[in-house]
Image (cartoon, rainbow, N blue to C red; front, side, top):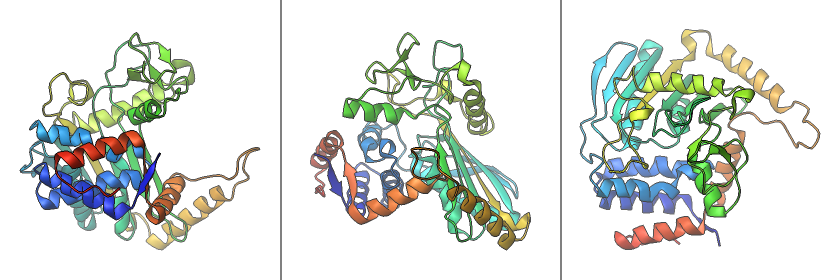
Length: 353
């Protein structure tokens, strides 16, 4: 049976686990907030279901728990960070925070990060910009090779997610967080837990053939799934993310990123890119917000197609999920619950459910 755990209790539990696994208290708190934020927003594939993955890497010494995250190159509108193999939550958070601070002065900033780790949901970092009046946030990362390019047999690219957050006035912000693959690998993990088949086009088996069996799935397809459905577009978007997070950041691209599928556990070499934009350097903020309200309002009031209840704007479902889960707790699947209880026992941390 699925159990619901209050957000604050789950966050305290994860913070304590990270602390006992070796992270400093501040880094543990940041990491727990971002990890649980995935569950809060409905990205169950990227939340506490992956706590055992991070704990395992900490236990194996694959993550530097006392990193020196430093800027190695900087201008008024750019900054390049070397994360020193830090846990990704902390390197991503600090890079985006610095990016936002620089944007207050320069109007725009692009920050890149090399030598980091898998950083969870891209949307968390993008929405950090919404805490500032009149600022847009963008976030992206590369990761382990899982995606097969069109007409290829093997995986070369990562899911290469990209996220953006754009404020509005009276309307809710426009927030998008998604992979450039047809789905994220976490969707396969969820299908395995629920023993449900996956839609045709999500994944490929070991021979590179389309499969609906989540247990046979080994690779993912680019956004668009198949060449006849123009999967070259998802492929191209993934390459953009790879270049910004790999070559431009001074790190490796997805084919050479280590991770959960590596035979040996070690530093992953993941790269990230963040951008913040101050709207008022382009036009008066009030005019921009009014125009955003007009567009988003028209979209949300659009006539729904037959059988559809309403027209959504990116970010609407995540907002509604967050409201519901903050009120009623985060649902945790029995298999995930069992893993969390094992971690609680191993680290002698009281479990909240």
